[in-house]
Amino acid sequence: MKPNCSQLVRACAIVLSIFLASAVPANERPEVASGATTDVGHGSSDRFHFTTIRAWAYRNFLPNDDDADVLGFEFNSAWSWGDWNVTNISYFEFAQYPRAIPGWPLGNVGDPNDPNNFQAATGVSDLLTAFLFSKKGAHHTGPHHFSFGFAAQFPTARDDSLGSGKWSVGPAIEYEYENGRFFAAFVALQLWSVAGDANRKDVNMMMIKPMLTYELSPNWKLVYMPYGISQYWNKPAGQKTYFPVGGGLQYGFDIGGTDMATSLQAFKYVARSDKGPKSELRFMLEVNF
Image (cartoon, rainbow, N blue to C red):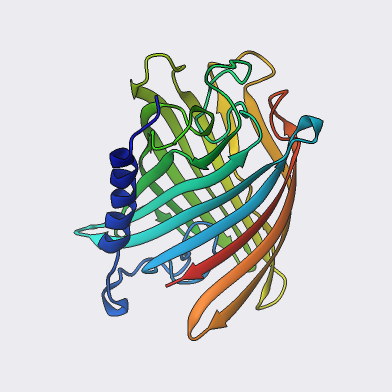
């Protein structure tokens, strides 16, 4: 099932509405515990910004030297809603695949050996989003911060090789810890498909996105921010898990009063599908408004 233009327009409207909903002036942003952080993986002293935008450019090195190039966009927004602090994370990609990649992008569980549906493709992936809630003054224990909510994935991909063809939902949780120069966080979510193309396999997968940073100097950090650790419960043994190891360096800077950061990381997949990526090189540009 290939979504039509109206589906893609609706997906873009969802991201835009999330972005506008978080547009609160600086003097109206909610206050949280002093140990909290700005957005997942950033590690500054003020947790809630207007929004953070990350652009990820990366290359997946596949078996047989057929590599895939991806440009991903991540929007992290936070705002106050009554007695609650709300965080949203939304992510989608523009990908160029030489062939279908099993389990790639996130949630795609199709058979890469099926010549009818899974070919080389270029275009937009599915839209993944999560909403996380924490009550003001609650879920903080010293340097620890918890929030809970839900995740959803929409079938906005223009090609079967770039998406699941399914509408999926499930629970999500965020955890953050900060101690001096060290910051650790993860977002974990579980997705089950609830509707979509009946000819596509059901989605039943878990993703954990860890983010670790260690401050070397005011501008430089060691970082571990991979695509994510994913587990596909309904795949055959030996094909279920993607687990990257590696990391890199991040440099923070300021342009016109806007906090920015850039990083370069390399990863090797110690667990993966036979036809999945062997390794990955990731470049990131982050802008905090």
